[in-house]
Length: 159
Image (cartoon, rainbow, N blue to C red):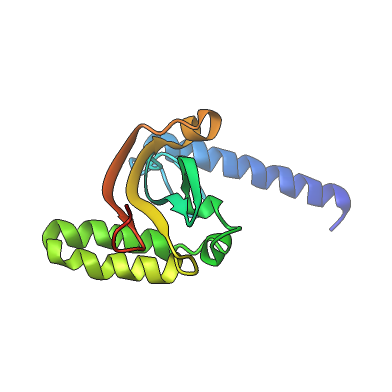
């Protein structure tokens, strides 16, 4: 097969592909023939995100003016440095379990403190859920809603 024949074959295949795409788009209700034609790649992606968040208010004598996101404190917590997503899963589990059975909370709080906040005498923290538009948060840092689930400290009497 010569170079000209190969080029003509590619043009022909491209035209067939385009005509099939248009034909399916006009005549077929489903409109998607996976994996060949998929017109709605991002049509089901929501712009509203819900993110469980561990906020740190204090580490020993270091008191933050504004609470810091756990994942922004990799210099203090090894699991924050490795971006361990188990903290997010534990906060989700805490939120779900406490809604059903309030006595389930202390065991999950201990697990969060032991796995993620160990290594300091005192860490004051809160468990929150953030609702935000991803682009708004990226461009402006805006969070639409903060829902506080728990505020605690790794010491018994934080006063």
